[in-house]
Image (cartoon, rainbow, N blue to C red; front, side):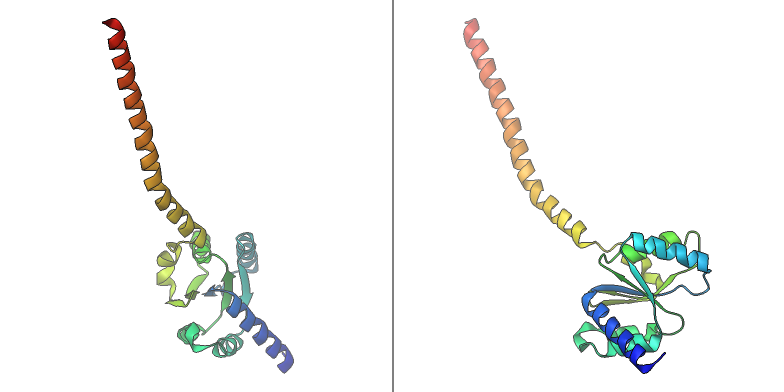
Length: 177
């Protein structure tokens, strides 16, 4: 690989890291080509981009980012075979990896970067799966906001029925006298 090609890859990775609030560093080595293709297909279906890149190029791209990004914590994970997974939904790769490993021994998570939080190691897979997506959080907030209003409407409706029942009973009682 020429110096220009390496520089181009580093620049491309810098842009990816800058524009991706969530990415995973994984190891999918020792999987057969057939299994890797199956994994890539499933990742593509979920909107997850997988890139296999040399660790030195990834390190150079991460080192050039501002310190507040907290990328330094990821450096220890950049040893051995590495595949990057870029996603728009924080828990999507973890869910897919756990499901995929029912039939294969890998990939495993070496590290995950979730909006400046760093998770090192595969033991965090369940924590990563439990993360809520932006849409899930918005749905929960809307549900919480709707709940008191629904209670008020329900109380008013049931109260209306009770009042109408009383009025009707009084009316009937008044007719009978």
